[in-house]
Length: 507
Image 1 (cartoon, rainbow, N blue to C red):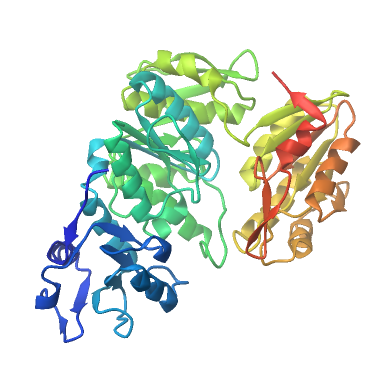
Image 2 (tube, rainbow, N blue to C red):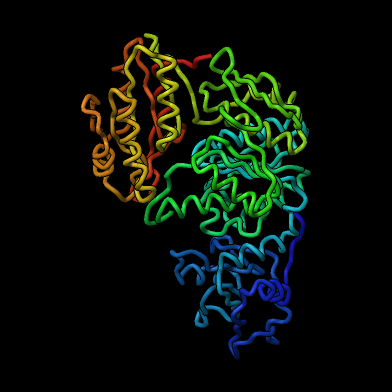
């Protein structure tokens, strides 16, 4: 990465342009122009993590949970100046006080790192379901067309060199991390970036001011609604729609809920768009001759992508995700032949892993955690085993997205024969209380509900129960080898590892 530096004067200029500056603080005065003691003050690093602070670091005091002790630790590590929404005169000699710390991060970070977003073709993908799958598909296609010059930021893993991948912490990285990673990608010779964009990324302004060359809107349904995320569905949808206002071109699912609103948002903000889907659309998606193939047709094939495609994953919902990825990749310079060559090879960690038990029963391991995901997996299950029973193992995470619980109960009522309600990252909540909330929304009297809070016991019991025509869906944890309990990661073998003890991959 280039040796980035920034002075207080440069920061002041940026903040003034965005009307974010309140004052500059020294031990002697509060000022609106740069005080004499801060004239020569410069920074060679930005951080919001006190553990990473050192001499020359501008420390950002951000977040609702920020505590003064974090700033004290940063000063102890060598920082001399902080930026915050309130003064901490008793802690540090120098301070830059702003009206909105997250917006300040979003304007300082790109300037500090030399605006790396301008040297990448950027694709941002949002939706309630399918972001990760679509991102993996798009990355694979572009990797073929660019000789692996594709940076990748997803909820699963990140890559800044097109070859090595590291586990992700957030679906969309924090602002300072995001621009640092983009700058590193540019230094590594990357030409493209494919990334997931969560509703929280707009809610918390992680991507404020970032304009994507291509935006993809997959679908929308109620999710991530709760005290610490979105207070209402309206807020969730509004945040998702910010991708439209911040993209140069959009790809829309013609059959998405609230499509007219998405289309009108594009039109009002003069963002050109193309549509895909299973009905009326610019590019029509139809299932192929087997569960892993699909076709795309169009009356006007400007992108030259019509034809037959094969996936390595089951599920017709993946056809739509792949179609969106093909359109995005081809808009970014790829060719249909790249998609036809690479899509069959794509494997997504913890998603749509299909195994077969020795007696013929099918096991699906997936991160599914909301109504749309449950619906899609259940419909696939009925296709694979139309005469058998559908057994679910699921729970819901504690402390967030409480609205999911009733949606899970609704989906289970519509499709499942048996559900094992168990623990799934309960954190500071009681997993049995979470299970009870899911069960309260179950309306199917014929649905058998088993409460088993030991997830390992629940998984093994469900698989052991499955007969030859049955199918088991292990939903929520995927490949994760832990459970979040009371703020800690408690060891857990993982749904996939447990399933593999009973079964083998289905080719």
